[in-house]
Length: 127
Image 1: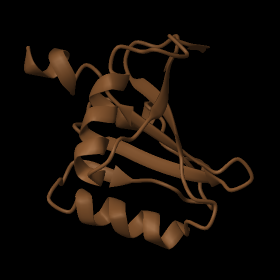
Image 2: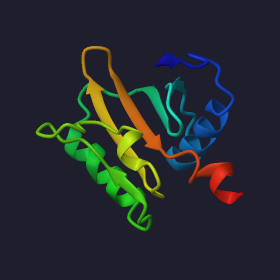
Image 3: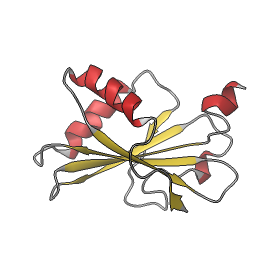
Image 4: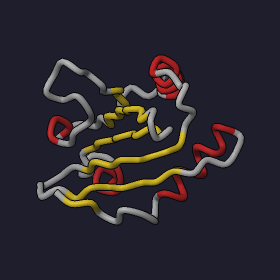
């Protein structure tokens, strides 16, 4: 496994554009996708600054509200299972996009992870 394009990834601008439109003010993020020696799947990590006072419950509410009409988006953050955060492996052959997060209160940032089967989602699936 290796980091792929640790900064200035070509999709960062799209993420910032959409988040800024939702927030109504400019949002800056750092995106680091990871290349994994496997046949399929993508795991990405996005960092954004947030207020250290932000509560997990508020983040959950925001994600659930935003993705309420998206049956293939799943929120993943389970302390008691093997798949605590999103991973590509359990998504092989599915249309699911798993999203998880953790908050680094000391640094005032949220770390959002997402995983998909890139042969189903994106250009592979459209083909």
